[in-house]
Length: 332
Image 1 (cartoon, rainbow, N blue to C red):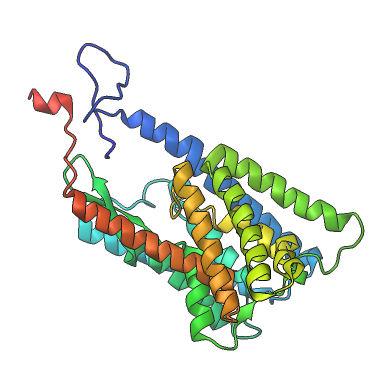
Image 2 (image 1 turned 90 degrees about the horizontal axis):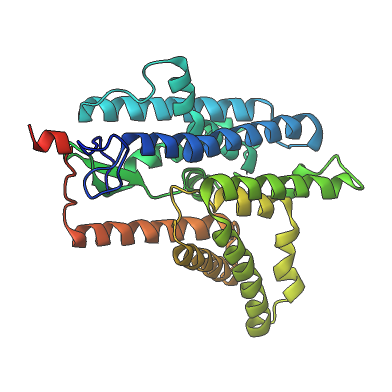
C-alpha cells in the first residue's frame, strides 16, 4: 500500500479511498508515531549511557560510545547518499538542520545500543565494526513493501539493526562479548536497585503503548520465555529457577522493552506479534539446549531473517503492487 497525494474534487478533506490517501495522514503518523517514538527512545538511551558511565558502573571505556556513534552516523550518511543518487531522489537528510537530526535518530539509537551492550576491552574497532554492520544492514537486507505514486518500488529493512550488528560481531570476534549485566547496577544498592528497573519498565511501556503498539509482543515474549524455561526444566532436568532468573536481569528488561519491539522489524498485528515472540523464545531455548551463549541475540537474528524471507516470498507471490494515482492526474 502506498501513500499518495490527492483529494476528491468535491471535498477538500482527506479521504481514505482506494488510490487516494492524503499526504497529511502520512505526515501525522510520522510526526506522532515514528518520529515521536524515535525521539523519546533516543533521549532515553542517551540518558542511560550518560548515567551509566558517570554513576552506574558501565565497564566500557569513555571512547567506546563515541566511536560507535561516529561509525553509525558515517555508515547511515554514506548509505543514504549512495541510495539517493542511484534512485534519483532528494537526500532525506537534506534541507534544514532539523531534517539532518531527524534522519540520524535511528543511527544514534543503534550506535549507543551497540556501544552499551558490547564489551570489547580495548578493541574499539570491533565496536565500530558492529555499529557499521548494524546501519549497513538497513540498506542491504530489504524487501519490497509496495510502490510509490511514481511506480517506484518501496523497500523496508527486515533485520533489527542493533541486534544484527551485535550478532555478526560476536560471531567474527571471539574476544568480544556482551557487557556484564551487573554494570547497570554495579554502583547502586538498596531501594535504587528497584527504582532503576521500574524506570526502564515504565518508560518502555509508555513508549510501546504510545509509539510502537508492541505491548502484545512484550506480554507474549514474557509468557513464552517463562514457558520455555519451565519446558526445559521438565524435559531436560534444568532447574526451572535457573531458566527464569535471566528475566530478573537489567539486560533482559532492556532487550524486552527496547530491542525485540523494534516496530520496523517486528509484526504490527497482534497475532503476528504473538507468533514472533514465541519464535524468538523457541530459538532461544534451542540455543540454550545446544550450550550456545548469547542466545537472545542469536534467536532474534534467526527469527528476523526468517520473517524477512517470508515477507519476500509473499510479496513475490502477490505480484507487483498497483500504482495509486492522483485523482486530479487522472482527469488531466
